[in-house]
Image 1 (cartoon, rainbow, N blue to C red):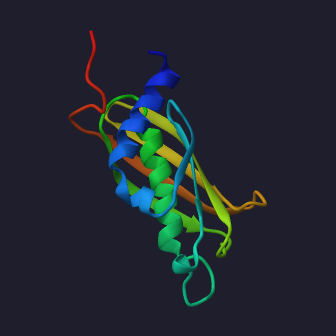
Image 2 (cartoon, rainbow, N blue to C red; image 1 turned 90 degrees about the vertical axis):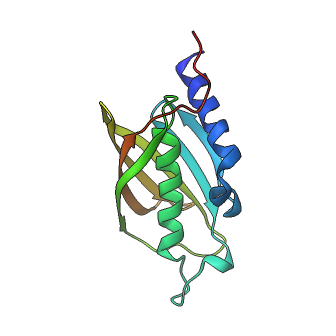
Length: 143
């Protein structure tokens, strides 16, 4: 299995049980070793009292992209810490895209940056997640 095939198989395995991302209408647009692009359309139910997308939904989109990016090596990996900086508002009807990229992966720890953009390509938020590899795999180990 090539690294890209492994990443895709891990993503498919995770997606089957990811009811949160599915319920929010997210789609996996691309996955590769240490990378994932996930998108989501902002619905009216995601809009806050300011008429913009609630930051929690933007964080959730970025966090999902982070999760799929750091789980591309067939090792169960969880988020250890994450932070987000909101740069611009998002609005109902906009399709947001979260592009997660691996910055560092050493031992059991990893660092991933996620850029969330709107349909015009403008940056909405920047997220940094720290991952930790734990016991287990997504796919059966083969010899």
